[in-house]
View (cartoon, rainbow, N blue to C red):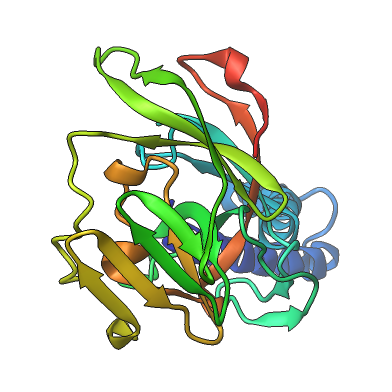
Length: 264
């Protein structure tokens, strides 16, 4: 997932568009019997296609590939997903500036955002804390605003190909019920916070985990594979201007085509 692709596509659309406009104006001067140069012919033909692709991925839906196991079991490494670009407001391409407000992120939704440490890289996690929330993750249990989040234990989850099990729970955040994983051998304590971006003073760490007060205009994100996810516990909060969109559909997985479909 790379922000640079949007910029590259935008530049290519501008270049092919310039060729298309120039060719349209020069056709009368050249005459109908004169064949277009190859670069004019291909550039003019590609422009409408590239323009449609650019508009679709900028304002409607954008495809992404899941590159890690941090969102297991909800999303697997290798899933190709679609992200709704207008759920959280219409934004200008490249600049990512919101121009039309629509909805705000809600707890439990799976969101793609620009990594605060490197905005050129896109991350995907689940929305856990909203602006103003107090989020506590202590002894591998989640509490929001002093209310423990409901969980129900399920059968242990077998990691295919790795031959080990993780504890699996159904967790309910807002109106969304989804599965999470815990590894009993992993400690609850957060050791590495050197990448924490802004507002580190809003978090208190102890041997049981972390407690954070979410700043205004920011969100606290966590992976469903709780002990194998570097998320807001490690690098901090996601500012509103970094939001890309809401993930909602798996459209392909080369290793397991049966995974195609929507998810929570």
